[in-house]
Image (tube, rainbow, N blue to C red):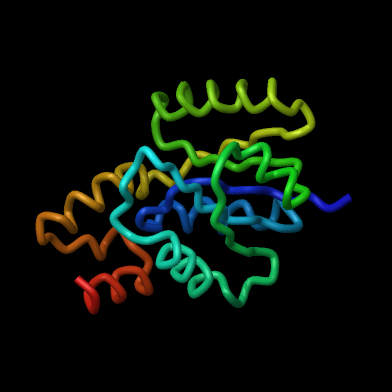
Length: 158
């Protein structure tokens, strides 16, 4: 049985912290689906199509990584792609408390899907999409927090 993992998030935008978690998870799984969740309650800065394009551009040469856009419960999406694992990145203790509550709910919804937590590299602890969006909205340069493909795309399409 293949070890297929879903890494869900909004990735609005994809940051170096996300890339770090994905790259470090590669040896752990046979396949990683970077899953862009859509939430009708949120108005993203970048379209789901743009975010998917960035993921595909950055990881296009890695056969073990694919991307998808989904709506609804993550555990239901996991079933659609035959994933038995969910991957989540942790920066702070507060992240863990929030993520554990979600993992517990997911386990109640489907006990066959296990959640893995990876802590980010210390140099990415302060990298959050929310902060990056705020920098971009206010005309700042967020390049130091972003993969070059994302930073260049934002610079050319302000």
